[in-house]
Length: 364
Ligand SMILES: NC(=O)c1ccc[n+]([C@@H]2O[C@H](COP(=O)([O-])OP(=O)(O)OC[C@H]3O[C@@H](n4cnc5c(N)ncnc54)[C@H](O)[C@@H]3O)[C@@H](O)[C@H]2O)c1
Image (tube, protein in one colour):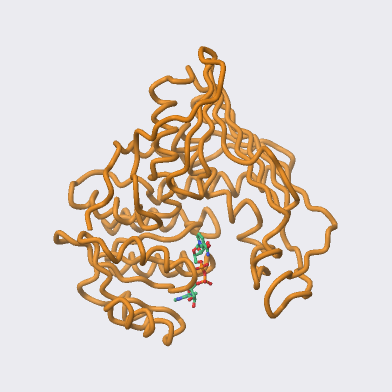
């Protein structure tokens, strides 16, 4: 790979705009090709970006592409990743890594065997919000971490999304949709999880599309819509997690880490740069913490940029397939624990991604 990583994007839907905004102005990443099942969409993006529109098979086979950025829907993640890896390309994929741990593990294995890197969203943990919270905790600002709480709760995506059906089917629900942000943040701050206990449930509330051409149409519910879990990290720290489509309002949303001498309120892990707050026993009050680590600018795509730098510098990349596989196993295990009302031991682990020093705005 030369100074710039040549990237081909597969999947040009809603989220691709955010990646293009981050990547298109960089000099260390070049978007050389784009593809989508919808060829017209690929032609449109190609015309706007100067990339070449290819078929999906054509892009996977093409010479001159170092990495495939897979922004397709979750059901297609594993298949596209596997084919790109088999073609000798590095891959970065949107979350979740795959729909099952078995498929995710196979991707991690095949990337390693092929000698290519596999990375996976979310990369929001590379922003200055989560990184600064982590730096404060690592340097002992709240003493020794004891426990954490992570809550994401909403009444349901059918209230704003015009085609919300997929959010209520297997592979989605509140846990698989929002869990990757919260669990990736917890693991990168507090380390891997050893075992989980979970409980899942759903109300009888009827779901109805609220906006767009399908407004008024019923949304069949095929997944549990309220998920709670207790995670025991390998370090002994205990995280309680709630992910729910059953809550009309809450004042408890977010992540808090409780230490022997204080609390850190970690900013929204679905975002990059929000404020960190800290309460210490010594100060006796909440204060905002100056950002002191992580990327200060950027957006979705920072994980791919980190992967390119890692390749050039011969170091480990941060939002790796291994990390995503561990998060996927936590989610699968929470559902399994909930079904069986039991504790599930995890079989995977991961290293905490290396912290990021406070980086200036990226080169353009
Ligand atoms: N939309 C968001 O706000 C958001 C936020 C964070 C992450 N994500 C994740 O990003 C991914 C994509 O989400 P989206 O909202 O952009 O979806 P989308 O439905 O808007 O776009 C997906 C695109 O992928 C294409 N596609 C599907 N299967 C394909 C295949 N086999 N080969 C080639 N192209 C294929 C579709 O034609 C479509 O253009 C998902 O994994 C989602 O979880 C989305």
